Length: 366
Image 1 (cartoon, rainbow, N blue to C red):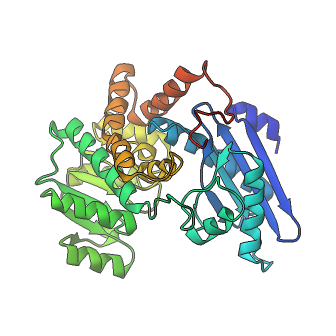
Image 2 (tube, rainbow, N blue to C red):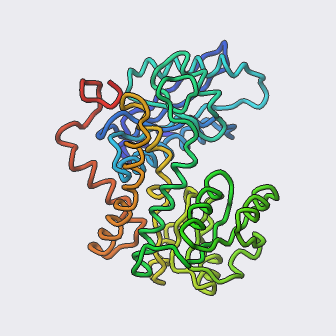
Image 3 (cartoon, rainbow, N blue to C red):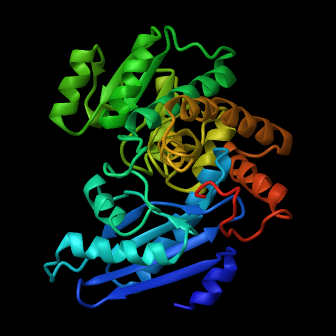
């Protein structure tokens, strides 16, 4: 892989390779853009087929965090870490993640880490033993705790903005919402919709979340018959790539006019965003809609987590989604492209004041 060519292609700032033979740590941190502030992004602990695959994943995820954080209105940039898991070697997780924490500390605040796929609060507790530049640990004073309720609330308010665009009113009273995936986030989202007088049709691959949703008052549908019941809104809250040729055809038949959910990478391909636009189905871009969790985590670095302050920013997801719709209308483009432009315009607007992040008295992490 031509690393500098890859960096130049999308204007990445930095890749850090971390190696500690004693603990078995092999990690890659990619910092994409720190115009708005330090790069914030989780640490993924995963088995990769090759080192190139790990680098590509770090690059892709870091850029995604830049756009999520910028479009959500946060004063932070985008970054990501992947730790390469060796299935053939037994390691001491505490030793691995404490070694990683020492490397993070050495970046002097340019990067803030958090949990991601394959990591939990426990691993972040280990990291915190070595650095302050970590969020989502139970040991750190001013920590914010489980981000799922914040993620769900952000999806809820963003869904209301999308409903206003599609139906002329942001009220979900009487609306039928199909939620695919009623786990930690989807279940809380269902509670909120039902609390407003909406109806929830829920699907999940697993029995336990299905039964919890049924007890809550949701109508349960088999995952294989997802669009067999009429609905107004589709909320993908599980796997990505569920918006595709087949599902869009079924959405039309089910009478769905809004796609607004918590899942990452909902569009199987970019052209599916184009297709939704052509059909008049309102798509609320996922990386803005599901940003409530990262907003909560980022708030820890404003002198400790303040739920009132964080809630205001999460509520602002409604306004950010409305900005996306305004850009889409202004430029006659699909909303997934408008979301990128929202992020890019925000970064460009402050580029002249600070193009490369370094700590100062005004920094979020000072």
